[in-house]
Amino acid sequence: MKNKAVIDILPLACVGLLLVVMMIMTAPMVMSHNNTPVNVPQTNTAERKVEEDIIITLTKEGALYLNDQPINRSELEEKLEDLVDRDQYCLVVVRADKDVFHKEVLDLLAIAKQAGATRIACATKKKKG
Figure 1: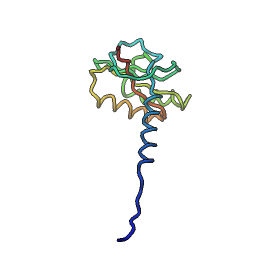
Figure 2 (figure 1 turned 60 degrees about the horizontal axis):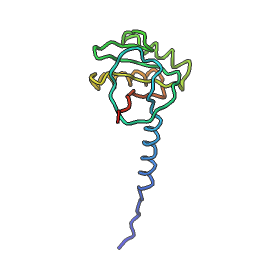
Figure 3 (figure 1 turned 90 degrees about the horizontal axis):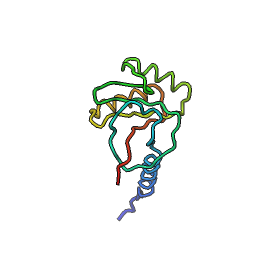
Figure 4 (figure 1 turned 180 degrees about the horizontal axis):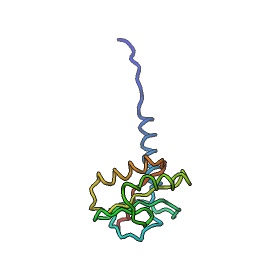
């Protein structure tokens, strides 16, 4: 019998799991721009301190807001680029109503990424009980 090389993937899996847990723990929970009423999904997550975040809000009716100011989807990327250029480490939070199609949320996440955002998160609220 020939000796076969064995690759142990357990350490790699542990590192991957650790990275996932770290991302979950650092995901934002509290928004600084929350004047636009949106019913975000509920989840079990940790609280965090409020920072000066860039907030993109999508209502159930399809209205789009950037930091609680109404905006057209065509203008969003340009305005977002301007805001991200000021602070490239700022957090871009997408607040979408829980009844909005996931594709629309993914489109907003893609726009944020194309605008140069390096820190992007989706808003949720903590489940009660």
